View (cartoon, rainbow, N blue to C red):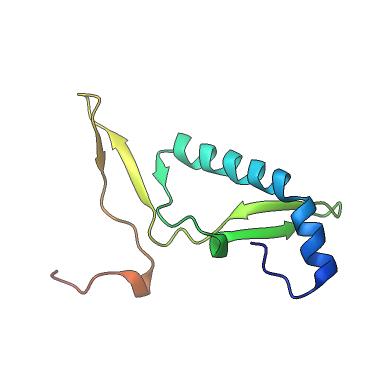
Length: 94
């Protein structure tokens, strides 16, 4: 997330860090409310995107190892079939 070789860009990102943390927290709440677990939150998966109005927003990327949760009638949470991107999938039959 804060990997910039441009000192001015790095300083700008550092100044926006509280906003970016808030953006990521809102994103995590949204995906958790949607019954999805990301399972790979790390700086490399946080993207800083410039909006049309010139402001920046932090977004969560790389859902390759995420899982969908569902709730059984007992109220217990269980994992649904794992969702993986092509190159992360287990070989057939394993």
